[in-house]
Length: 159
Image (cartoon, rainbow, N blue to C red; front, side):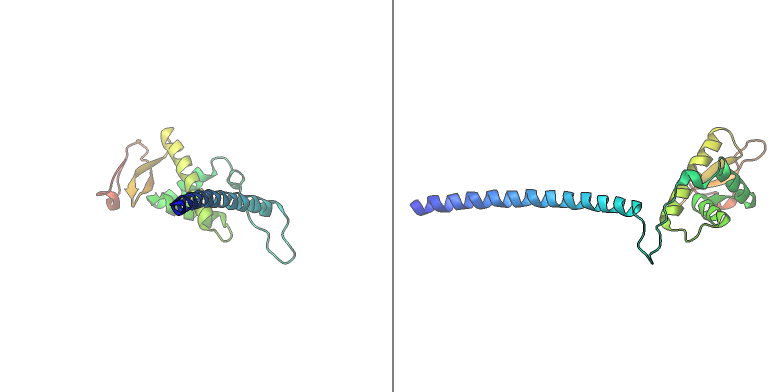
């Protein structure tokens, strides 16, 4: 019988050690994540070593002048309705950004949506005319202020 008490005590100790290991593994993962954030921040602020390229970081507030996005979008929409992705690609081409990556494209697309929604809210010349594949389609408003739908969007969702 004394053997059963020893086995029970050892099983209890093993369970305690397992739970402590699980807790320590969670702490280790959180610590690894914190370390990666600190290292990324250090990388942003230190000068590159000889022979390596300096990393580019965009400050979206300094890339565009006031109302510049709306001006570009108005110019692009002269040819007809375009969706947000097409407008952001058009702006990237117009501004001649070197090596645009997906993060830059996404940031500019968000800026386009923000600028055009404000224009629409203020009664500007640009209006949403619907969505195609979860992307907002924009068009210039008629001078009378009437919304009009192009043929390609006739059967699509409209907001």
